[in-house]
Length: 285
Image (cartoon, rainbow, N blue to C red):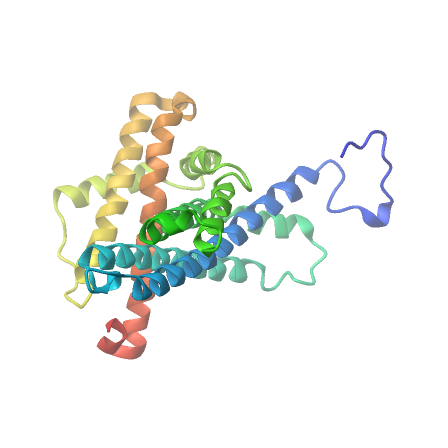
């Protein structure tokens, strides 16, 4: 659709004149979060299809669900979905906290500002969710074998439909560039003391501290280690490229991969820790 010399009634104006791009960008941010939720739900459905088929399909006298290679695939799908669901709930909490007192507010500028604070998390939701769905759809089809290509089986349509999600709401490549890019922008504006964070990470790598001993203590320490690696790599990249780092897309993409998996892993561990605190060890069964 092309609008030329189109007049908009005052009562239909969204936000401030000349600031429409702010609303458009925030629509993208929420769209990315929503797409993460949609793809996570679709991935769950893909897992259900895989479970149903592998329990029914028999080879060598038993259901293929009984083979350990099948069980490994099912477990890997479930792990990815758990992480995807965890980061969606976590981001939902951030967005609700940021917007809960603004639902009836006429201050669109404040609403836009608060939404923009979580642009990175929304980008992670979109990338991780869409790639989780692609992974699940691919593995679920693999478990269906040749039947996965036949339209009578629902996994065939899921495999075709999943692909577009890595393009919707900005390609995954564009969203990846945003993840470290937003951190560097915040550093440039003095909003994040990146240098101090990197110094702390280096110090912890040189003299690691033993954390608390518990059911998931190793997982908690693994998250801390991932954060140190992310900060160290970011620091090394910035030291090497300086202000021109924004042009080094291959470096930014690699940093984004570390960052989004860090957010996913941390979200899963935090969710598990809360579950254990509420329900005890039985929540692990």
